[in-house]
Length: 294
Image (cartoon, rainbow, N blue to C red; front, top):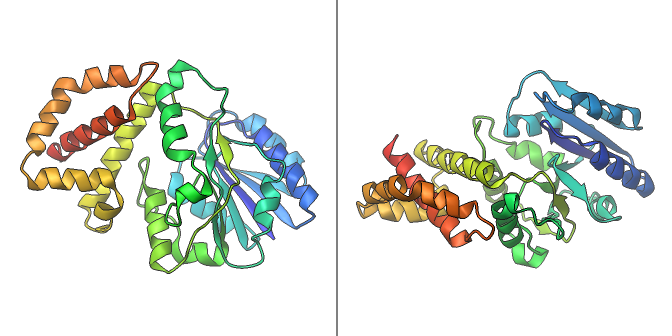
């Protein structure tokens, strides 16, 4: 009935799989759990213990094929119609996590469970990631709205997935979920938002998060530059703002501001109480800088 699919890269997923396996057994439905190591060099041996659990298996890829390609490969490997995707750096926080999804497995659907963060995590090294996650990602089903799609924790019927699939030309970090969600809407599918979050545990420290932010911002600009995704200008506030700056002829000025203030902004954003307004400003300046380097 349901295939639980976990793309994994250098992360210990034994606790996650153990919790999911126990819950799936308790639902008394047909299931499988597939862990796919996407070129991992760490925790591979530890993760082999999932093979000892009934209906569970680990698939090891010798090289990293990317976030989009590995999800497509997992869908192809799945034998059941309902596909439950989740990121490897997740933790189950409800005894009914699997059961809530099983309730939707009788028909074609796209169901988003949501993301949460450990309320006891206060390490200042993760202050920016925690603030962003808690204020921008950890939203209720009602707050998410019908158009919000995220790959961290979602259920989708294989018949729907195969009409879209993730764009494997996207090799960098970020925005594959935006493209996937847009294509689903184009085909007329609605997202069912439910209260069934996983806790995001694999936090990036402040500098690493800023580095990923830069990679994602650069990737957004490159996707827009291809001309294949004109809708990005409407769905990304960041890109929309950049386009207005570009049309005003101010891109060079904003790029210069990044050159002059980037290090200071980075230091402020790595502090104990970073500002998300400043974080948005940093992304905008970086995007302007990126556009000047094309």
